[in-house]
Structures are given as C-alpha cells and as structure tokens.
Length: 289
Ligand code: NAD
Image 1 (cartoon, rainbow, N blue to C red):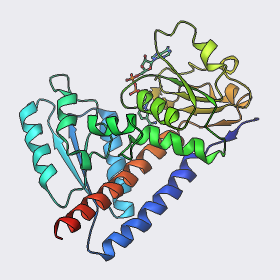
Image 2 (cartoon, rainbow, N blue to C red):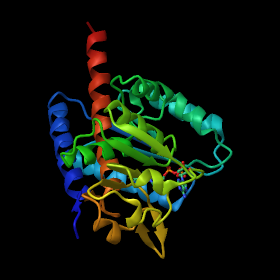
Image 3 (cartoon, rainbow, N blue to C red):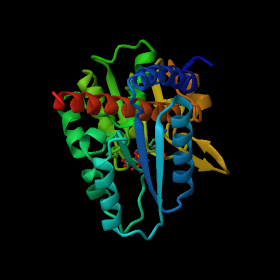
C-alpha cells in the first residue's frame, strides 16, 4: 500500500484537545460554551449524528441541548424556537440537523439563525463572507477536509484541485476554500461528461457524491491527496465514494471511511462553537463598555 493514511481519528483528537483547552480557559471566566441542536423527525442517520455530537460536547465540556421535534412540526413553531435560541445567552451555537422533512423550508430556517451563532456555517451571511475570503464560521465538513489536506504538508497554492459534488454544504464551500488557497479548482457533478478526465489530473481530489466506489484507481493521479467525504450504508456498513484498497496503491495520501472526514466534521463543529462563544462574549463585554 503506497499511500499514507490521513488518520481522521488521531487528527480530530488533536483538534478536540485544543478546543477543550480553550473551554477550560472560558470556564475559568465563568463562561460555558453552549450548543443547541434542533432535530425534526426520526431519521435514523440524523439521530445517530445528533447523539454523537451530544456525546462529544459532554466529553469536552460544551453545554449541549438537544431539541427534538416531531416530523410534522409546523414551520412557524421551529422558527419560534430558533428566535428564542438566538436571544438566549447560554447558547452560542445553533444547528438545525439536516435533512428536514419536505414540508419545511430549509433555507428559511437556516437564514433565521443569528449568523454569529451559525456554527454549521450555512447562513448566507457566512457563505458570503467565505466567498469574499473574510473570516467566518465555516461549514464543518469542508473546514475539516481543509485541515486534513494541510496535515499532509502538501502545498495547496498552484495545485490542480478537483471537487466531485457541488452541494451547498460540502462541494461548493470546499471549492471556494481551495480557491481562496490559490488552487486551480474544477467542480464536477452528476452531469459531468467525463469525470475521469478531471479526477486523473487532480493533485488534490475531494469526493463528496455519496456514490460508493465512484472513484477507482485508474481515475487518480499517482501521488495525489485523496479525500473521501462520502458516507453510504451498504449491508449495514459505512462506505465512502473511493475504492480505498485500489486507490491506496496509487495515491500519495488518502482518508479512510470510517475514521476519516466524519470525525473531523464533528471536531470542527466543536471548534466553531467555541469560536462563536469567543466572538459573542467579546461583543457582550465591549457592549458593557
Ligand atoms: P448531495 O446529494 O447534496 O450532493 C451530491 C453531489 O454529488 C451532487 O452535486 C451531485 O451532482 C454529485 N454526484 C452524484 N453522483 C455523481 C456522479 N456519478 N458523478 C459526479 N458527481 C456526482 O450530497 P452531500 O450532502 O454533498 O453529501 C455527499 C456525500 O458526503 C454523501 O455521501 C454524504 O453522506 C456525505 N457527507 C459526509 C459528511 C462527513 O462528515 N463525512 C458530511 C456531509 C456529507
């Protein structure tokens, strides 16, 4: 096996340890960073993700509140909950677990979150700041992928980067982060005519399509950094979008699934919660004069 494994478990533990140190300093000032998670309905994957977030919050000292709402909850009721959380001083981060039931407007709900508390980085104000290269709360998955690429020591500037997938939560912000780092970025999607023509010239390949084994060894440039964001359950097992065994023989660096990007996504959410708490508390102090 030629490729070095980018170990999401170890890297996320490092990041969580740094976040925990920051929390200890906050607590010495009487501040406990707080995260509220709204989950609507009982999507099994969402329930699992939310339980995991709660567990990690508890393990590093973030106050967490899970707000469980039935699948048929009207839009107005969720909007009221978000408005209340926006005002609550114990809550520094608000997250609406996606996907939502189809009767709800995801965009409207995400847009109601106070941008300073938008720890998922999905509010258009935070997307806009990312677009302009301004500091902002970044979506956890692309932020985590960026950290994983940086951990390899490979320079991003000037490289050919290919992002497979153009969703608002992974592909698009990922492409902008890589552009902001001076990579030459191509974004592929399900209608891309010749995917291999793009992937095989990528020095950095980020795959977020949700299609198991979409990326095979012949589609990867020797020595490339390959980041597999995909999560699909096949026969009860989690698999990524990359044919891990075969691609490992060609790539320079590769992330495993599980034990890769997923771990970093949660670690970045925790970091964002503490970052949000820091700015909100600094703002509060300055408003007191
Ligand atoms: P999505 O369904 O919103 O978007 C998928 C994207 O992949 C689309 O832009 C689509 O055009 C593209 N695509 C689909 N089939 C393709 C093909 N054959 N060739 C090229 N492009 C193709 O999904 P998403 O929310 O962006 O998530 C993508 C994957 O990443 C899913 O498996 C999801 O579970 C996973 N995910 C993982 C994490 C994590 O923390 N590891 C976080 C978010 C999403």
